[in-house]
Each structure stands twice: as C-alpha cells, then as structure tokens.
Image (cartoon, rainbow, N blue to C red):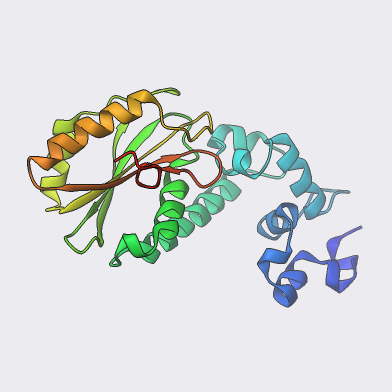
Amino acid sequence: MSITDWPEDERPREKLLKHGADSLSHAELLAIFLRTGLPGKSAVDLARDLLEEFGGLVGLLSAHEIEFCKAKGLGKAKFAQLQAVLELSRRYLFDEIAGRDVLTSPEATRQYLKARLRAYPHEVFACLFLDNRHRVIEYRELFRGTIDGASVHPREVVREAMRWNAAAVIFAHNHPSGVAEPSQADLRITQRLREALDLVDVRVLDHIVVGEGGGTSFAERGLL
C-alpha cells in the first residue's frame, strides 16, 4: 500500500506538520527524506530496511559514498542531498555558539563538537579558538590519525592559536570505538598542550572526548 493510501494521521509528512518532527520515528523521518519507496515497498518500509542494513541512523548517515550508493533506493543524488542536510545541521549548531560565551552554553558547544567529530572512522583532534570573552573565533581540525590514536604536536597548536589571536581554546577529539573515556595518552597530551599554551598566555578551558552519548568533559571531571 502506498503512503498516500494511509490514514492521514499516519502519513509521516502530515504527522510531522500536525505533531512536530520529534513525534516521528527514525524510519518516518528518513521516509520524508527519501520521498519515494520501491515497487511494492513504501518509503517507510524502505527506510526501515536501510536502517537495519546500515545498523541504525549513525551508520547510515556516516556511510561512505560507495557503500551508501550500493543500497537499493539510494544513489549519488540522495547521497549529495544527505551530505547537504548534515552540513546544514553542523552550520546551524556552529551559529548557535558563534559570537557567544561558550561557558554559558556548554551543551550547545558539546553538541556542535559531537556533530563535527562523531562520524569519523579515525581519530581527529580539533580546536575551538576563542577570544578573551570566550566567544568562538574559529573551529579547526588539526590532526588526523588511525582508529585508535592521532599524533598531536603542541607546536602546531600554539601556531594556530597565535594565527587566530586566540585568548583561550577548547580541545576536542573523537574515539571511533564510541567509548568517550579519556585515556592516559589523552591526559598527557592535554597537559603538554596546556603547558605550551601557558607560555603564550592562551588558556585551556576544556577538552571534550566525543563518543557515544554526550561525550566527556575534562573540565567537568576536574582533569584540567
């Protein structure tokens, strides 16, 4: 049965307009994005199949283009559309923190860093550079590594901080394993970076480890 033959209250688009996007399941939201299904299969059925095939929403949204396009009902056009949607969401989250004191909106800052780093299959070390009122100047991904580590060079971090005339910085990196627990190596490099930046009067406000859930804050843990 086509979605157009469903009762109006059960159609994803109408349901969203009437009750809001948060009332929809992952499959229903994805069905609105897909717009059409396959012969004998509604867009919602196709969405459920895709979520199962990719192991959930994160797996689907972070899939490589080749893997994504192999799935029935998808292709390059859908991949491009999805990447545009993801980038719009990241830019929206950046606009939420840009020009504001990040210490007054720690959850927004964490959500932005999570959106930027969570999907990478390898470790990425990034910095939010801030002015003397703790407002975001720039976000930069400085180092990329393997599935279980990335080499971080304090000299390069200091150089970037000076480039952006930063007064403070927040570090962030992802754990592809999904476990957001800081390692001993994370603690050591954070201390080295803090000591290097102290020499040029740049404060380290936090280090966020991104994994499953909300991520782990060094500042909240008392690790800085």
